[in-house]
Amino acid sequence: MSCDPPRPSQLRAAVDTNIVKVGERTPAPALKIETENGVRVSIDHTDKRLGLNLLMAAVGTTDVDFFNGLIGQLVVAGSKNGKPNEDELNFMLSVVKGAEPRDQFEAMLAAQMAVVHTQTMSFARRLANDGSIHQQDSAERAFNKLARTYTTQIEAFKRYRTGGQQNIVVQHVTVNEGGQAIVGNVAHGGRGGGKK
Image (cartoon, rainbow, N blue to C red; front, side, top):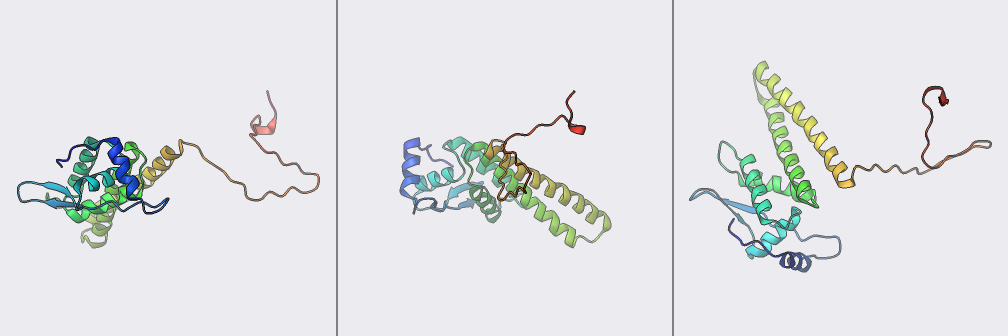
C-alpha cells in the first residue's frame, strides 16, 4: 500500500466523524487484491485515506508500517495454491476486526487466531473427504492440534485483555442459623487446617 501514514489527529478525527452512535463503530472497508503487475492490495473505499484510517482503527493501531505488515502476512496466509485469495483475506481481516483489538499485540493474536481457524476448517474438510486411512490420520492430528491451539489463543487473548485478573461474582449466599459467612481472602494451613 502506498498511502502516507496518517497523523494521530487525522486518525482520531476520521474515526470520530464516522461513529454512528455511542458504542457503535462504522464498518471498516474490505480489501481488494489486484494481480495484474504482481500483487497489489488496495482499500475498497471511495476515500482511500479515510478507508485506511478506519481499517487501522479497526485493527487497533496508528502505525501504518504495522498495519501494512499485518495485512501482508494475512495475504500470504490466505493464499491458495500460491495465489492470493481476496475472500480468504477479507474473512481473516473480519475476524481481526471482530476481536476489536485495543493494541498491536491484540491485533497480532487475533490475526493468528484467524489463520489457525481457517487452517482448522481446512483440515476438517480434509478429514471428511480424504480417502485413505493415512490421509485421514494425518488430517485428524493436524485438526486436533489446531483446535487446541485456537482454544489456547482465546484464553491468552482474554488473559492479556484483562491483565490476567479473574473476577468471580457470587450471586447468592445463604447462611443458616449458627453459620458464618466469610468475605475476603481466606488462607488455611493446608491439610488438617493446622499451622506449623
